[in-house]
Image (cartoon, rainbow, N blue to C red):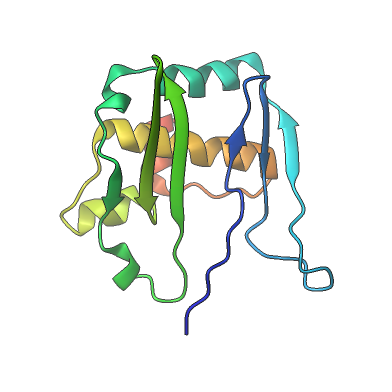
Length: 143
């Protein structure tokens, strides 16, 4: 059995606003509500500075650590689209999980971990859904 649900995990706009959608649809409406927030200058600059790092432009176009075979009930695919230094980029990450990727002997580059953990933290800040794995807490200096 397979399901393909699409939702906005996180979208950040140039005017410092951000939005995301919950992972589940509202059953009575079969629609997704959006969470919206105006980012602080610090939050906006943090994601912008990471995307402007030269190492981000050197990341591969796709990361798949075969985690989908470990996580049988659900998995998420991120399509990270951005412009940096005059270049448009898309990086696809299947089931971002730095700890699991390391355990499966396919660790992500440090740059991808920093970017992914920053995305997860921003999503938590926008949605109020608090979920950061221990690897992201360590990278972001959160205890």
